[in-house]
Image (cartoon, rainbow, N blue to C red; front, side, top):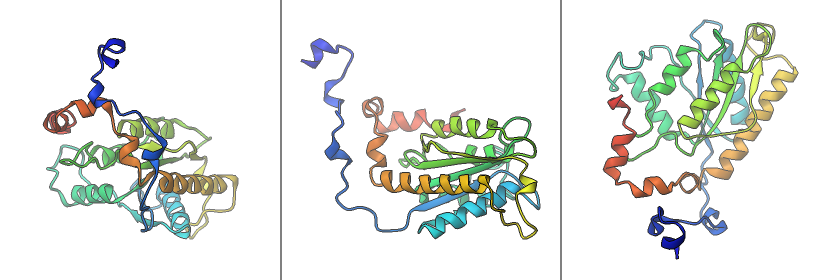
Length: 238
């Protein structure tokens, strides 16, 4: 029947989705795992301060959180991927079930420091996809009026990394006014939005982490051999 209606389809590899396949018999019992990346090396980095505010919230909700320090991470391709900071970042990407990316907006875009961290995370590590199917929240800080250029860019990047980017996001304008001398964020609508974003990220992570491999399973990739697929997503060939 399929051959007559869909001549281009390999019916043997078609896998019609069902509600039963989304059921979880044995849900994970460990705390949801979150990796936090930020995009500035300044001594008083507002993207780092926002990141730690978000990390505290995720921990208070019951998550396990690790924040990657980008200091010392080489530029992509300037060092072999055996570099200790690269290995640290990749192991954290494997470990995480969700991520938070927070970047300053610089020249209307995310910073090179932010992009370099993601560029060091490949689409595949052997048979493991370190980002595919994992949740992502994006946030930005600005020195001037509110803007969404960096978060919009990071959304595109998250899709490219095959992540499930949540609908909500945060953009903190004039970030230098939003923190006290101790580096803690003052009460404001900007802080409230960060709480919203972390709550939503936590919910989406609980909802998807045990079925993420099924959610991102693809017909086109079932047609490819494992060797051909690994070769296609190998960034070293670029």
